[in-house]
Amino acid sequence: MELTHRIEHWADAHHPLWLDLIRIGLGTFILFKGLLFISDIRVLESLLMQINLDWSSFIFAHYIAFAHLVGGILIALGLLTRPAILFQFPILLGAVLFVHSDESLRTINTQWWVSAVTLILLIVFFIYGSGRWSIDNYMRTHRES
Image 1: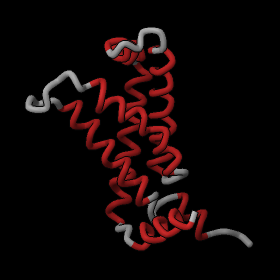
Image 2: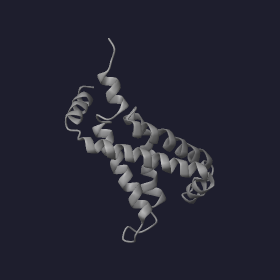
Image 3: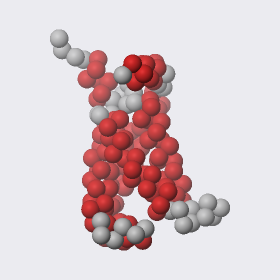
Image 4: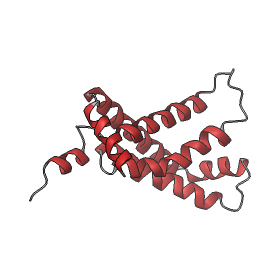
């Protein structure tokens, strides 16, 4: 517990405002991907079937779409940012390691790069937190006694 408080204090002290804009953009991007997945869930299910998730592709497709919708909103608003990011980690790890792994990194594989950059940004915001322009910060600084 002591270590997490020290990391959070360090991250709050070293959190530039432009990083909040990137967090808002990341959350909006994840929300947009969730809307794309929900608009055509069969494409996502078929993608999951290609990596041998035949029996559970329906469940995973709906988890991915729901986690992107809710997580994208929470990350963009800066509300419960770290828990929202925790729900995104398995999705992005799966996208980077399994879904796009059959394509070579030497070729122009934009989907893999987008997934990899998104995963890196999620790791950054898991460490740094939500920042000053967030609902988390507002709730932390405006506590009523």
